[in-house]
Image 1 (cartoon, one colour):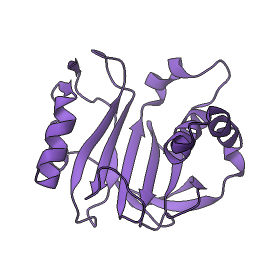
Image 2 (image 1 turned 180 degrees about the vertical axis):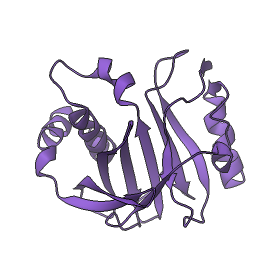
Image 3 (image 1 turned 180 degrees about the horizontal axis):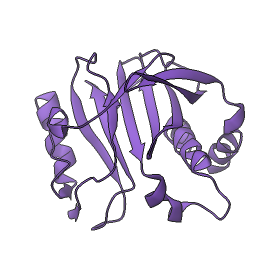
Length: 191
């Protein structure tokens, strides 16, 4: 079933211009017909995110829009940590394990990311194997989650996406789900 989301009206980020591989719209987080609270942008040749490939998916989240989703007393950081644990450990389908990992986000190791040329601190979660995921709230007006493999998480460089055409969609126009995602992936990967 298709539905429309209004244009994206908060900052979105992706890998910086040094990334030479394909870029696409990966996912929209939000209720049908309403503004999204998160947008995921994909990078690489592997939409399926298989182990051993070089890829990253960058999620940009609006703290204001995601506030109603959080439990009373839950912080924006904990919500992002839950997303990190969910994308990295989701294969386990063990919601208790995901929640326990998210609960200890403050003890996760830190790495430095560059966002628009500025160094920010990110919390990192690594599972067995090459995949990793992390998040930062050190960027104004947005929280960032990155899930990747084959890329070094320490020193990762991200940049604000001002022109979404490099991801094969128009963020300034309403987005039809899932058509916009499929069209973006098809264009990026030559399908």
